[in-house]
Length: 394
Image 1 (cartoon, rainbow, N blue to C red):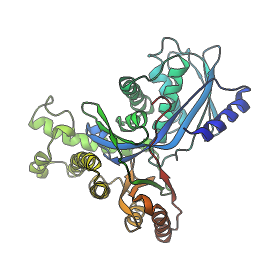
Image 2: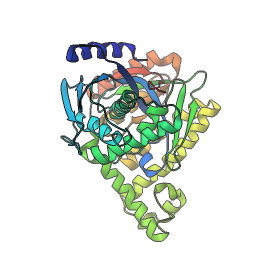
Image 3: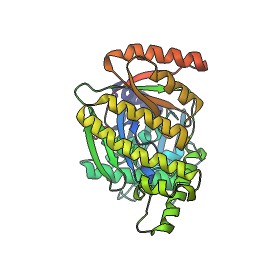
Image 4: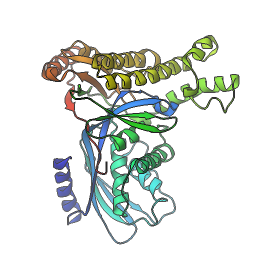
């Protein structure tokens, strides 16, 4: 549990609102081990919730005003819950995410209670560790707990994940899938989360008796998901889906998941030259996820690491969502002692790299990787070892 973070949030709440909070929740960030940009294509994902958190502490108050203080921005937002609609606020602003959660959950709650809350976190912003999903899950859990509801089982977790995706799609304006929300909500200590985005089947896969260290490395470059690139990639994938719908039928082809690598290859010269590269990445990434789960189940960490590195190469060449900084940091990781594999994590274009490292060589790995990245870029990579974790109601 993020005890130190909760302690700081309690102190901030008392400073802002004059008394102690009555409700607390928290949600982790996440790293994607395999399954880059597969979720909105109804593909397969393998992720791990990690011990970087967003916490929400607060209390109910009379009336219909929600007052939320975001510590990271030193800003307060006041929302009139009695209004029939909620203004989205500026694009990319933190308020759009918090307001989106309220927008998505207000229909689920019989009445929505006025409240005061403080949001605080240590998930790096814009780094590919899903700080936005961590925030949205923590606030979603807070609203449910404030109104006497809780997450009692996996069915309830999936229901909340769907509502939060609705908020991100319909309110924030980001055409994301379920990957981040499911990994955050279903993650727990000692497990990876394997999600089939077509049938929404979720399996927890043990990381093993002697699991690899999950080393997260921030390139010190950031990007904003809502800047349009994410949605562009989705439209490029959908162009290939449209092609196969004309060949087959709309009912047979609902997403890239309904296309085989063999079909893609057979139609290659007839396909959009950009979209076909995006599709090849997604289809082969799905196979890498299946192979990765099998590698975890058999304890073959070397095989898992190789799949992780192949995933990054595919992101570079086919999906083209990497960057010079990400490629340089991955290259430094792969030549460092103990590295089993490394890849970008999250949407891409900047942010973080995740590496799987032999546990007894972590210190040597981090020193070597940081030095290599510094020499090539002049930048300092923030590096820390992550451990699997869960959210407050997991």
